[in-house]
Length: 175
Image (cartoon, rainbow, N blue to C red; front, side, top):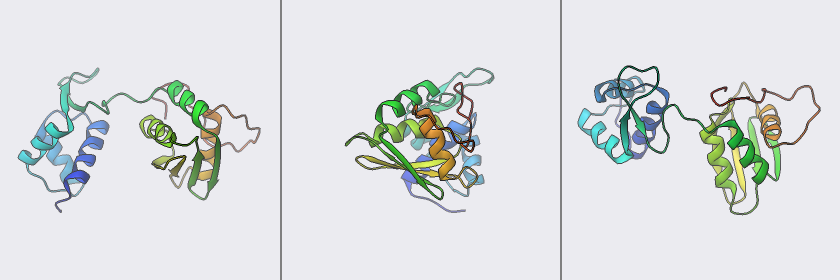
């Protein structure tokens, strides 16, 4: 186990809160231990306060759970919102190996990257946004070409190829 930088630890905490129904600080300490991160409960308490984490009631969970206000635990960007953002802002899509390059108008890449990150779309490991370019990293199973096809379909670009990659989700929560 190791101590990690505050920013990395807080990013991990936000991810753990988004992926788990965390009802106590001691439970969060245990989840961090499973990730190989050593932190005291006092440190976690400060991190939760700095992240703006609140205890909220969630459907199907008996006790209130921690959630970060910017990334509520059970909320994902609705697929229609992602479609709208991609349809409005995506100019060009290309791929190579497990990478997808999405071009946008100048100053707009962060909008597309944020929508992709918050959508938790299957096959997306993460994004990096510049001024007018988003680099989307695809997981090994999806691959760049298939993910580019999915992003293109979500953006409203028609493709007739039979190997278009993963299906477009119909509803929020389908990933």
